[in-house]
Image (cartoon, rainbow, N blue to C red):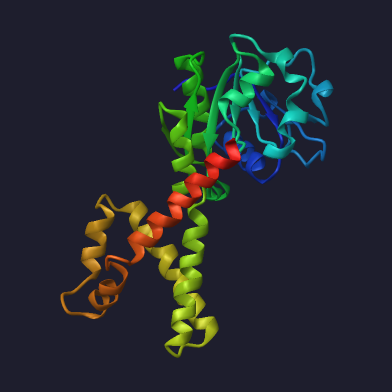
Length: 268
């Protein structure tokens, strides 16, 4: 897989920092990275940085410009970056809700742009990112963007950018659903008589351990569920509730559809 020769990271908050740490951890030389961030975070040894576009050295020619600032300040930050548009440079955005068209409107119709939808487990290297690119992105540039995002987890592509809204509903917002599941399980444990601390410990470790089992197993989720479920047992009794016609699947579908709709609304 083609890796970028040089990376300009615009924005070094939680996600930007996680990406940078992942790149260096995978062998990217720190001197191949330049960071632009007005907050001037503490950077790893060998990584150079500046507060604004004007601080980028003339000698630094980025193969990939990673846009990791918040969506609401993107337009202001991006204003000078058309100067970097060239065939050998691809812009990789991780700003939620910002469409490829919105970047083309600022950078120009010829800009090579890839839109990414990561999720928060990227902070611990267990994220999932879905990418979509415009028609100008080359195969080598796709590979370079994929290589950068695999530093924080798995990567998938969609040919239709419109599917990013559904991706946002499932995986982008998905960690919050899992965390709420822990809250709900703990609350139910308390209702069943457990002490609050024990109920939360059981819920957290059960979800975390089940996720790790799912990650390490080649079996589908359905098979893993069936392996835990004895006919007529306690798990089966609980699943009779969760798998009813108006149970968890129906509720989750409604939730994800609403998140997908909201993603479209925010994208305009």
